[in-house]
Length: 340
Ligand SMILES: N[C@@H](CCC(=O)N[C@@H](CS)C(=O)NCC(=O)O)C(=O)O
Image (cartoon, helix red, strand yellow):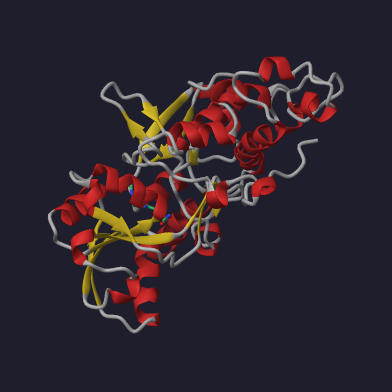
């Protein structure tokens, strides 16, 4: 009897019960009228609510791009704040339709956890932040340090590997919530803060005295941050993936939020097709959307470069350089397969 119950429970876990986690995410999304997007609890530049609950950020704009592709309206999104730990159950259970939350694409998340990743919206790597007063110039000088880290992250795992590989001792100070890690570091309970470099930039801003802290030169891992969906729904996976590629392709074409209407009259057939302005195109309908899906994305949030600059670029408090996230034509890794 016990065994039967157990197999039923495993069956339910494997196949997913309830409509929210069913295979037809696009239908669910259309029926409810919005995309439920799993984001951070609040990471400056990436996903943050203001006092009236309006979310903005680099990841938030990706959620909006998906909504624009589906509804022709970038505002049709609701946000679910998730911690590093809670994000995976939120996606598995169907509480969210997509996770856009600085989540590193790893093989175990792609297999054992049951997710799918394809388009990387931010190429990152793990770094270390220290108070300048610690007088340290390299992570290799950190033996014996107390290191603040958030649980449920690749960060925690890479930290252990890096210190072991370099024969360094350390004392992990682990918390589930971002504000707990921040508070512990601010209070001097740890010598070092480690997370993705993008996260370090955001976190440093949240400190009471950002200029007293520096980011060490070592990048100890690859952190390709990618939106994730549940396995078993290729149609939705395609939409989430190509929404990202559309942002990148728009930048490559020089299509911006300001010129997108004019670009519909371009003499370049590639651009016209991309914007759904070629009569014979099916690129949108083949995705299960309308042919102006990419036009709607650019109209709603701009191109990849605009999204980057608006939220985290040189003229924002974060001042992040494009680096690996430049277009492939400019020495970076952002590259979209042909949209034709
Ligand atoms: N990319 C890493 C780390 C992601 C992560 O959760 N980073 C923390 C530290 S920056 C974070 O975003 N916390 C925000 C929160 O819990 O709301 C991963 O996927 O495991």
